[in-house]
Each structure stands twice: as C-alpha cells, then as structure tokens.
Length: 287
Image 1 (cartoon, rainbow, N blue to C red):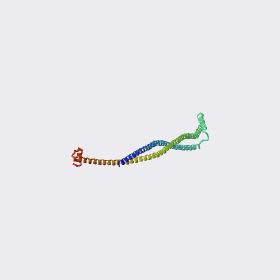
Image 2: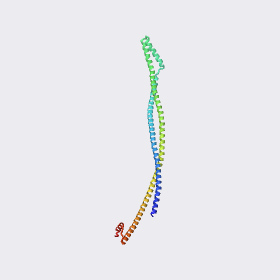
Image 3: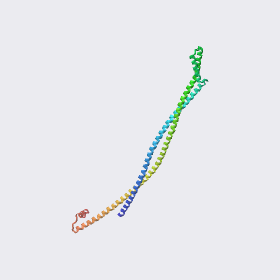
Image 4: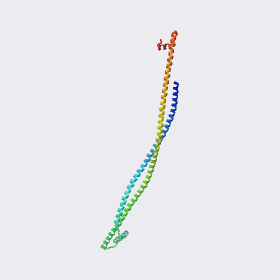
C-alpha cells in the first residue's frame, strides 16, 4: 500500500511540475498582453496631450477671429455712420447749390477785383462808389455760395478718405479672418483625427486588457489546481508517515517483547542480564 501511495505522490508531483510550467507560460503571456496594453495606454496619453495642444491652438485662433470680428463690426458701424454723414453733407450741398450763381467763381472773382481796383485807383463820385461797394457785396454773397460748396466738397472728400481707409481695414480684417478660420479648421480636423485614433487605441487597449484578464484568471486557476494537488500530496505524505510510524511502533513492540522473553529465560537459567534488559523488565513490570 505504501508503494502505491508513493507512486501516487510521484504522479502528483509530475502533474504539479507540468502545471507550474503551464502557469509560468500563462504568466508570461499575461505579462506580454499587459505590456502591450500599457504601451497603448501610454500612446493614448501622448495623443491626448497632442489633442490638448491642438485644441489650445485652435481656441487661440478662434479668440483672434472673435477679436477681429469685433473690430470689423466696429469699423462697419463707423463706415455706416460716415456714409450717413456724407449723405447729409451732399444734401446740404444740394440745398446750397440751389442758390449757385449762373456765373462761374472765376468770373465773380475777376469782377470783384475789377470793381475793387476801380474804387482804389479812380476818383469816383460818392454815389457811384457806394453803388460799386453794394455791387461788391452782392458779388461776395454770390461768391460765398461757391465757398460753402467748396467747404462741403472738402469735408466730403476728407470723410470719404476716412471711409476708404476704414474700407481697407475691413477688407484686411475679412482677409485675416478667412485665413485664421482656415487655420482653425485645419487644427480642428487634426484634433478630430487624433481623437478618432484615441478611440481606436482605446478599443485595442480594451481587447488587450481582456486578454490579460483571461490569462490572469487562467494563472489563478492553475495556481489553485497546483495548491489542490500539493495539498493532496501532503495528505498522502502524512498518511504514509503515519503508516510508517505505526509500523515502527509495531516492530518496536515485537522487539521489546522478544527482549523481555529472552531476559526472563536468562533469569530462569540463572544467567546474568544486561542493564538494558534489566531496564526494560522494570518498564514492563516483569520484576
């Protein structure tokens, strides 16, 4: 029976060795899948930082676009105000032009100069001089219409120059906004592409993690199986040791009985017994 149990222990340890080898391989596989998963997670972390940077740049450009739109809106408002002001000045010029003399300004200037020269250089009767002075005043009032029209034209030209300058700024804003919007769109598309890549990697990392868990669970199952077999081997070993102990005790009892019988025979024959024989006779209450 002991031989059968020893054979069973050898079989158990052979099985344990095979299971340990399988468990070690399973652990290595679990580690490999964990390494792949961790590598992908690191790549995801790196891409997320890249996405964050792309988003930051896109938002900075969007803020610039917002600011440019605010400036452009303000200039458009100013241009509308200027256009309205030009319209009012033109209406005023139109009203003034109603009183515009038939004769040209140069003709009026020459006539005034001619009269003033005559007053200054010729001796004139008082009534004639007064008449000429009155004539100059009339001509001056007619000339004032031209002056007012010229002032209005100058004002319109000045304001129109400001309007053209504002128009150039608006055109510049529009061009810059268009360029910035294209840059923002480029960063946005890059960001979406990286986000899509993150989704793909997350799915891959999830699959790798699942494989890792499968191998980890298998490793756990193998460890439990090994423990079960070790416990069985231990139980059998304890059983063998218990059997061997009982066998030793049985043989020891037989030996002691033989020693007692031999010692008693010696005493009957009047022979001397040894100290060990005397000791065992005392222990067995034979003397």
